[in-house]
Image 1 (cartoon, rainbow, N blue to C red):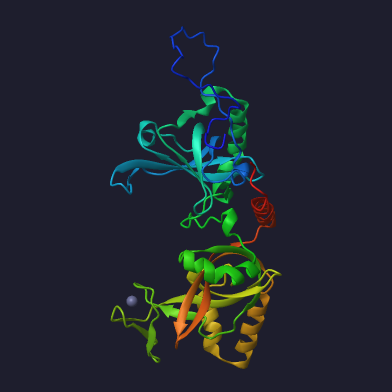
Image 2 (cartoon, protein in one colour):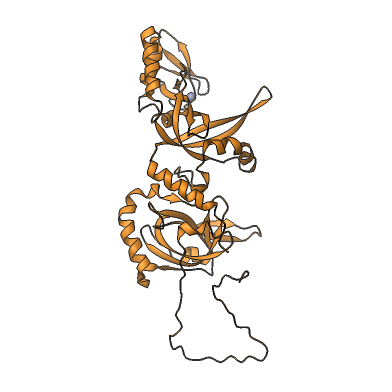
Length: 365
Ligand SMILES: [Zn+2]
């Protein structure tokens, strides 16, 4: 059984004595029998294994022609497919290759059943189907799974982006996946090694603001066209100059660059957060207001700033953290850049923790 994807206990072997004759189909042998695997179980099964999946299409990519190692071209289409195997749902990227990528296209909201998908564990979990896979509209099969999924999706469709993803690398939407939600201690311990194998590595943390650094440079004046930092040119006329664009303006864009210390009880981490990403942490206070507080530079305004920054502490956020190594005077240091800052949702993060625990279970034989 180790070397086959077919889930039968016995097999027949033909020898040179076997005789094969064609008989009429009496329809007693059923066609396309599915043995569905729930998405919550997929990460315990392991790479290379074959599963059948039923789920709702939550996004459809374009058909792309991919160059293979041997020089051939193959069409590929990515679907994102979700099921209700855990509260809040679960989704995965399913890549369909070859003729099946173009022969039939499914759309968002359709319940589909796919036979013979291979599990890949590169960058989280994804599923791949080829010419041997069978895809169909599951509502035609009249299965209880498809009606359950249909009623689940009626409410789930309004918050598709909150559905937990098994597949990593969906950075555009900033969706955390099971394998990159981390405790701060884990990030501190693994960043160097992770960066060595994947320079684009990103983590997600659920953490509290311990401190927003009191820094008069936490708001800078950005160039309206290139967003680079502008230098004050003429204090009396309050004009700013962008060296890159070579232009001056009296209307630069006040922009945050804040330094925040996060803690989650396992450790703490300093992050830099730029631009609008800082807004939730700054209590949605506009950068121009903070800039004004610093510009006053009086005893009262210093107290005001201190009180304001203190009021930001202890709030909880989910943050995407990207590590990078910076060299300065021959010294290498690890820096963290935060983005995708969202208000922390305890229910959601508890799901992640429970699901991550399940990743440590021994794979089923
Ligand atoms: Zn510029």
